[in-house]
Image 1 (spheres, rainbow, N blue to C red):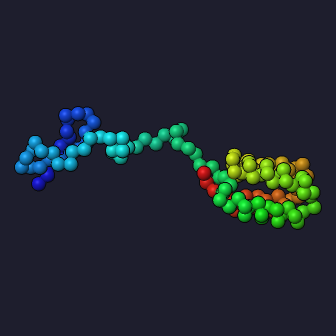
Image 2 (tube, rainbow, N blue to C red):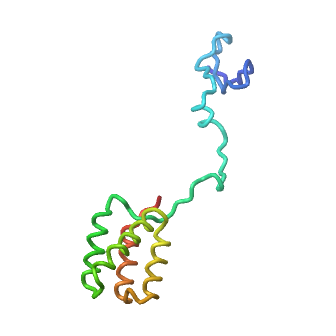
Image 3 (cartoon, rainbow, N blue to C red):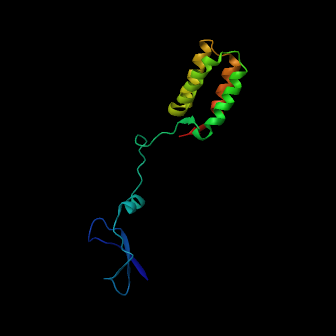
Length: 134
């Protein structure tokens, strides 16, 4: 039969069990290491310290995303020289900042009349399709 005691020899020993026959011989006495401290300490949920997840472009599927965007852009009547920097800006904003910032950038391009409504809608749908929470 086992009894559980707190070992008060040091403050950083955890709950241990002692044999009933020989109380001086601890069975399974473990010193509180960093790993055990994390395991046995009460969890504190500080939302300020935790990293908030943001929708970003999935980098693993970046080539597929570029291919789909170029397919959409070839169907429009915009010059290729204008599309290369726009595509690069969309990819960098979506992969480094967030999908939300990339959506705002695409809507600004629509307001400047560089994009039509159909192209804007297709690009926003593509960004939503290739998103990932990071």
